Image 1 (cartoon, rainbow, N blue to C red):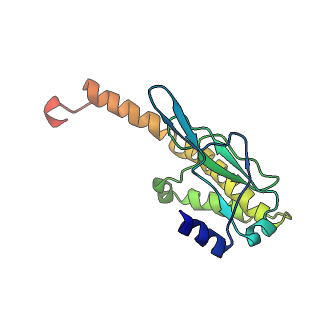
Image 2: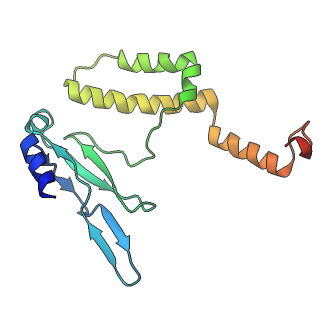
Image 3: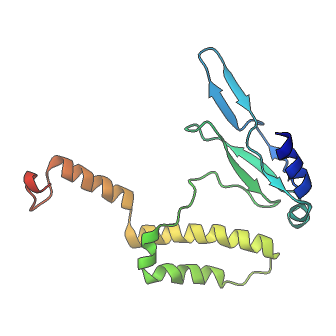
Length: 162
């Protein structure tokens, strides 16, 4: 562990300040629970000068034993909603790239770091909206198809071909 600490020191990394509940990991035993702060966000002096006031939030995810870390530059809030995931199938639709280009070509007079973070966030929001409009709910469609297969209700298919 000391070698790791020495490497952090040599590289000039420092712990980012966190807000809220201090622990990021837990382990339940029969009679007690162990809590530790295992996960940390580190940064250099250069980072601190570019993003002063950055805080780390430990997001509560009850399904896991580790909490997710949200690094939040001053003036930017961490989103507690479902994380954005880019879907590969979107690339088959030309309007996907048009949606992205429209967002990134918008003029903004904010500092570059804030502008980039906001455009990334906006891009995720717009692509999610665009996906619902263009593809509908893929998850719901998959569930319907699975139910149809399990119930043997797909037209033109016999049990032998399923």
